[in-house]
Picture 1 (cartoon, chains in turn yellow, brown):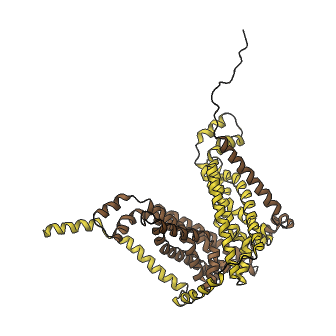
Picture 2: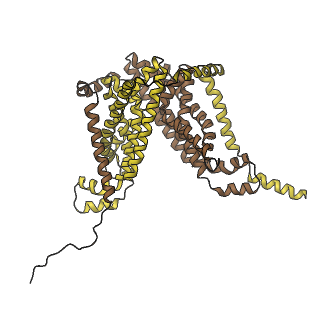
Picture 3: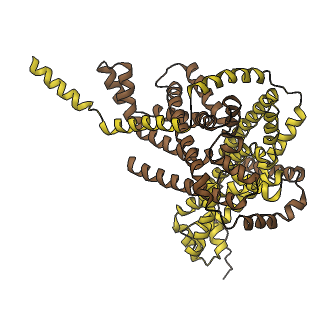
Length: 266
Length: 271
């Protein structure tokens, strides 16, 4: 009887053995959290005071104030224009740059600089690129457009290059065997294989540019972000709430259009 | 001897798309071109700014060279470490909040449609607000500093982590769960020994991926006063200390690249 019980215990211990390595990882996380919160001077007191202030803050946000809708519409339209122009130029530029970065079609002398450029464009957050353009060429939507073109190249060109590297070379060889020029090979042998994926990246980037175009204004890059930031600075919280609601609405419509586009082209 | 004329073989003509599909595509192209023309005609760009953009940009870059590397140990290093703390703590906090919400959103864990939809609403709300906006809100609440930045990163990440975690849980195979239920396992045991081993690889992969994104995002938060290296960048730019700006940008670039390499290495070992 007891013999049977110990046997069962042994089986149970084997089936659900404690994972000491994993427990050490969790302990490490706990120690880190305590250490880092100490480093950043987080105190419970500050948190509680903040919650109190948060309640008054939320109270002042409602009801949202839509009476200055002309200012709101102007900012949203500018954001939309920034998103459309930067997506168009950025996606078009990504075609040659992505092709140049594809290691199966291009010599190393071409791929290395193209890849370095893509890595540079991808590493910085669009807002940081935007602030540099604002300082260089001045306030306004032009800086935002340049920043988002850069960001688009970083994303679309990278994925486009990866898609080209995965194509089947048989078709490329077949087109080449007919004596086609380099452009002929690209248009007839490469593009048909990657076009639908390219549309996918492009719609994703359009969606992402729409989100970022509402933000570049915070650093002076044009669009609704500037209106939002100045409303924050003036403690105009009911207008802030109205702006946030409109931004979220625009982004959700953009997301719907993007998913519909993807279905059309799938 | 008659001349044979070759007629093309008759048969069905193959077409890749139906007329409706083709029409839809042309409509999309047309709308895209119209939207672009409308944007270019209406956007308020000062042409002089556009024409001398390249000289202005070149001018700025020459003023940035050479980077003032002596600035790194005094100020940049501390801010960089703070940025990494914000990103890491924010990711951990977001996971703590996102796991319960993700479980609520998973249909095989909570069989009530209303609860699922409510949890999904929270996730969508978190994702549709940009991290800069979250940072502005929390700076208004907690005052400027790293606390606002950390909470902003956490709230921004809930949507991403929660959505992917819920999808991973929904994909878990029901076999082990049924076996445990048949053995009379309690509800926590079911989660811990049935679901957790199955979603663990996805969980670590999601957490690492989000941490990588958060390192990039937390570098920006300082521009609205939420701590980290963005604050130092903003100060250097306001004083036109371009050589220092170059140092800061180099530091951000290095950290982002290192974070990406670290994530790929850990992921290779884990999965």
